[in-house]
Length: 113
Image (spheres, rainbow, N blue to C red):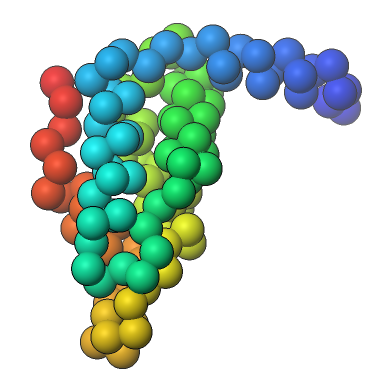
């Protein structure tokens, strides 16, 4: 059984996982790109970027690393962000999905090395 203290300890371990500047800027570019996308009525909020930031840290920790890789961000972007955007009416009836828009966003933003 996991205690409350165990959960709090794990949260602190996740927060200690490092984000290199280039990877953090990658998250920001993903989020900002959705705000300028005309197919979206509502792009990602700061809470969306924080969710991607924290889940990427958690994934790195689970993988045994104390640093986040761009692959962590890419792996989690769709499940963490797709439900946080609102499609424009034309895009919605044109057959687009939030998942597709996030995937396209990931394809057009260069991955840091």
